[in-house]
Image (cartoon, rainbow, N blue to C red):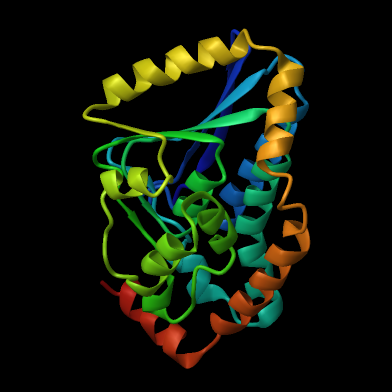
Amino acid sequence: MEEGSVNLNIKNGIGTIEFYHPQSNSLPANVLKNLAQTIISSGKNKDIRVIILKSKGDRVFCAGASFQELSDISNTKQGKEFFMGFANVINAARECPKLIIGRVQGKAVGGGVGMVCATDYCYATKYAAVKLSELSIGIGPFVVGPAVERKAGLSAYSTLAINSTKWFSAEWAKQKGIYSEVFETVEQMDHEISEIASKLEKSNPQAMQKLKEVFWSDYKNWDQLLKKRAEFSGELILSNFTKEAISRFNTK
């Protein structure tokens, strides 16, 4: 099975990070690690003034955690390490001094929703429904929760977390602040992303960095917060309820 990939393309001051996994752009540990490292290195790259975060493919942005890797977790140390992968991506986006534009062409689940909410400005198509499915398998969206709550508010976060089997439309996500704009087609979305990225590339990098600092100034404790969330997520993944739920999913 392919292990997935993370690629960076730099053109005219715009750094485009694209991730991929053959299982609906799910996020195994190696993809999460490469994604966090690429965001960090892009933030330090003087040839990049603005970042676009996207995934490969048509109708699925990200399926969230790799269920195969979740089923292989056998102790709390492994569990914490796995969920820290999501924490590291979110913190990399938070600490990145460059503005990050999200491009969401299709559905986002779990960690994918957290990744969307860690961007600074996010475009989507009408097919980009969102779902936090964690509770349905006996855990919870604890690591991604702070990012979702920051973007959409506690009410929307709790709605997604509790109604864990329901898809919420892209329009709903826009109304809650998860998406900045929603388009009928990928072509329309990509045109607008190209326009704003080109404008930002010509903007004052110092001003953009200060904006980024202001946007995230109240969330400097996330290194510790997300680490704690990863710890109890790693404990819950070992429960009999969760093991059985994941087993049922993997045998579908």
